[in-house]
Amino acid sequence: MNLHKAQAMIDDLHELTLEAADAVRAYHEAVADAAFCRSVELGSAQQAVRSAEATAQFTAYGEGAIDGKNQAERDMQLTRYLACDESVTVAREALAMVERELATLEATAERRKGEYKVAAYRLNAARAQAELMTAMLTMVAQGEDLDADDEPEYEFGQAAF
Image 1: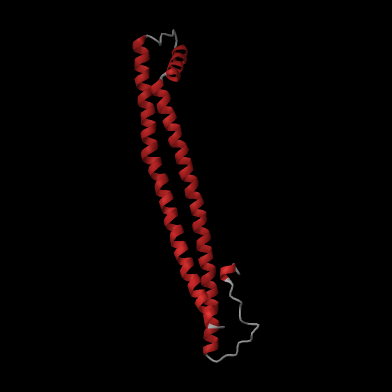
Image 2: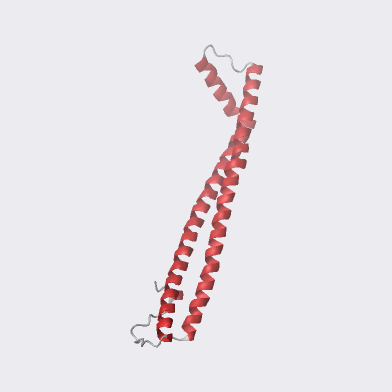
């Protein structure tokens, strides 16, 4: 084992540690973005739809647009009125946009979670390789003979694990 291989391993460990830290940070940011969207933006959009529907419902009854003889007929008239009301349509479209954004943020968080796991696996593999080299260096330092066949070929940058 030569000093260049040991230095290359140390450099790879350092780089992989930074990559794993970046992956963890990105994952937590994505989770926080999704949580904010779910709790604040989605709630606001849902409230806007409820408010627009309530306002439109009061307007419909005030204008006499809802005059059915039974509940089923009045419900159908109200549904038609709400579907044609511009403020309800705008609020529902805004809600749909927030729901799409939330789905995108949640998918991003899942992807970041996968990237974080891959980075952690790569770092663990590099640590195991470093432990093996450390054990071999210890054996050499203690004067034990190490055959050329016993020395592992370090190729972490080439994904030798």
